[in-house]
Length: 501
Image (cartoon, rainbow, N blue to C red; front, side, top):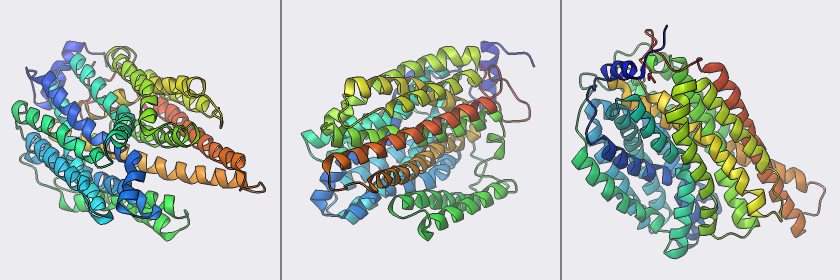
């Protein structure tokens, strides 16, 4: 099949999505969507740095501490596909606005929490409204930008936020905790939400692309229960052994429920996740790329945060600043990857290259020691990792959502967010377990009361996590190289339409 020109591709894609003329407000819409997405991504990490302060203030145990993070992840992951379909069925503008208001209200509730239960409930509500907001925001980009060049620029911004938002959350969490109080890591969302809501109210139109379809209730229950069980199982792996029924039991149930969901989608009259979305090779490869990136990135954010604060003595604010070079590198290569490289050489070269660069950066980071210097042992490695991830996340997100029929834009966007969230849960559980085992193995036969021995044990745990993150990225290199088709993406008549560039 001959490759199409940029203009032909844009016209074909606009016809496929049902949106011909580009919106004159599209760049303002991008700004609003970016602000909303930043709010959602921030909350995956912004509270982490504030946890010790919140724990002291509210008096909950170390064992309960993980639920402040897990409650958000569980609600977010399990309700994402439902949130995406609601945006398709009832309109993206109301889904976006309700998501923004609900997220802000839940954040205010969490900031005012007078105990552990209230804080956990608020975090779960944040996750639920985030599951409505995130796919609505991403699908708005998919249906607002109909020109391929402009779409590439829009997705470079969105993908950079999705990839770097966790690091920005660490910085903002540190600044707010140091300067004000842990509660402001939640209250800050109210201010962000005011901007997002005002922009959304003024700029967005309300087009219901799947207004004639119906909600797939059995599919919704199956996938929500399946994703909940999967994330819950991996979360339990952090607090329990892998042979605990709370771990393998929920993982098994989650897997079976997701298999049942896939089977039901082939028979449902109005499927929640039409399988045509998954059957395109480039789109399937992109979903896997987002999943693997989510898993590997936690090796950077989680364990490097521990290392900078506990071993190098950085304050929360300085720790957040330490991640900024990675964010900068990611944003630069996000722009180059989506607007220059992807349209010219295609994803089979760009995304595996990004994974390979990130692999090298993570492997290089394993050289840290108890007395290492940030400038020589951390900074260059972070920049290399940022360069690699910038070539992976934005192009993968663009290819995962581009070209789907307009009535499927919300659920395709939700699938991307679900992959990132599940990947993060898998990465957190696996890396925490492997790091703890490495520390235990190092202490075996040594004087565990000696401060230098204990310090080296923590270094062993961090470097083990970094090595396994490198393994994740290396697997991403191989998998994406094998799955992506050669050349720039072309129309496949047997699948949902894909982006032309």
